[in-house]
Structures are given as structure tokens and as C-alpha cells.
Length: 208
Image (cartoon, rainbow, N blue to C red; front, side, top):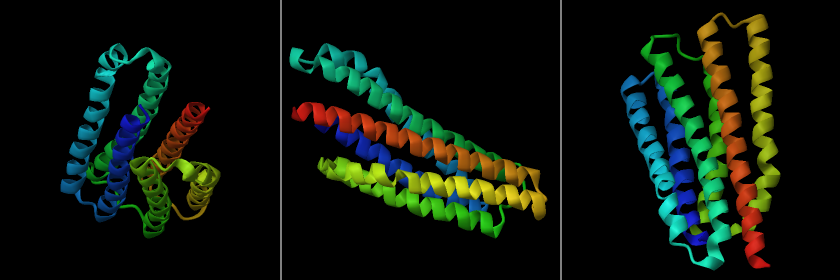
């Protein structure tokens, strides 16, 4: 049970990491063709989660009696994976729509700030991918303790954008996109942490 879930979670972390970074880069380049490809990649990821959900009935049917309690854990894990994918879907659609509608490019300092978040998120997701791939979960406590750093960065950047609007920002569309990306990234991180908390709880129960 742990092994199957770990492999699936690791793969979602890896694909989420790559897709988020590509989205920020392609938004910066105003590369509509690549953003369209990002939409296709996101739909593939969404389909993978849907397939896992479709298999839940058969997964539960085939469990031996000693593993029945684990089915609840598995369903909750899929819920958090779906939350992650929905956040990426929202970010993908917003980036594509902004460029497709020929709205002004985000400013240098906005892209720079998004790249800062991207760097922190890449580090987090790489740690998580490695942990779940190798089933080496000792880092989970460390990652959970560091989550506030990323959430604090998002909060700080929201405050910075509010200040820009009050002083120098002139594009409502830019602000709408920028706030949307920050808030959805915040939700993405929270979904990841909820999944980690659940996985940690289940892992500890299995050790007892």
C-alpha cells in the first residue's frame, strides 16, 4: 500500500514541479505555443489522477482484510493529489488566457518574484519526489517545518503588489493575473502539506 501510493505521489510531484516551472518561463517569454503545450501536459496529468480515482473500486475490492483500513487513506491521498492538479490547472489556464488575449507582459520585478517562488517550490517538490521515490520519509518533518517559508514568501509578494498598485502599477489585467498566480500557488502548497500530514500519520500508524 505504502509502496504503490509512494510511486504515484512521487510521479505527481515530479510532473507538477516541471509544469509549474515551465509555466512561469513561458509566461515570461509570452510563448503561446509552449503555453498551449503546457495545457496539454496538464490535461495528461489530470487524466492520470482520474484513472487512479476510477480504479478505487477495484482497489478496495481486492484488498485483503488486514489492509481495508488503508483504503480510506488511499482515497484521501487521491483527493489531495486532485487538489494539487486543480491548482496547476487554474494556473495553466490563467497564464494561457493572459497571453492569448494579448494582455501586457508581466513586469520584470513580477516575473523575478514569481521565479523566487518557483525556486523555493522546485526545492520543496524535489525533496518530496526523492523522499517518496525512495520511501525515505525522515525528511517529511523537516519539509513540514519549512512550509511556512514558502507561504510567507507568497504573503510578502501579495503585500508588494498591493504597494505597487498604490504607487506605480497601471495594468489591472497584470494585477489580476499576478494575484491569481500567488493565491493559487498558496493553495497548491497547502494541498501538498495536507497530503504530507496525512501520509506521515498513516506511516506512523503502520509502525505501531
